[in-house]
Length: 149
Ligand code: ATP
Ligand code: MG
Image (cartoon, rainbow, N blue to C red; front, side, top):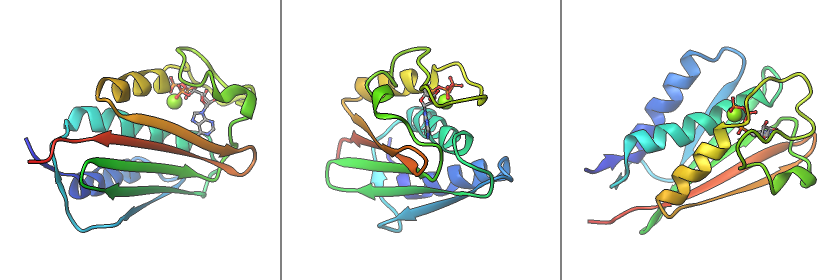
């Protein structure tokens, strides 16, 4: 089943923004609409986890940027925050169950979100990477291949 990924992301951001007073979520998309064969449930799962982390690990009133790019074979999502960042030493283990970085302080969590995201991305032959600087911010980049019809 084809899904308009741009429309889907717009609605998701709207939904997240409705329950989030503390941050502003900006969606940037290269195109107006794009049909892809990707599972909605899978996408929701991945994106809600990443957006929730971006909100949780960044200061009140800061901006979370959500960039969407679609090429002929894959969809690329980037979720960027201006938050606490992730120390280099923790980055290898981030996707392991129950792992939490050394700088979380009093921010609560179970350490499961990213492990589940990683598994979902792997199952769909996608890729997830992270770029981060402590005290500056973090960007998670997910690419998911889709069947083109
Ligand atoms: P939960 O299971 O409730 O999501 P969690 O947020 O602690 O708990 P993950 O989402 O798996 O767990 O993230 C693992 C760890 O990666 C976090 O504990 C945190 O240390 C780090 N992390 C994830 N996203 C960010 C981010 N955007 N900025 C800074 N650190 C992050
Ligand atoms: Mg989380």
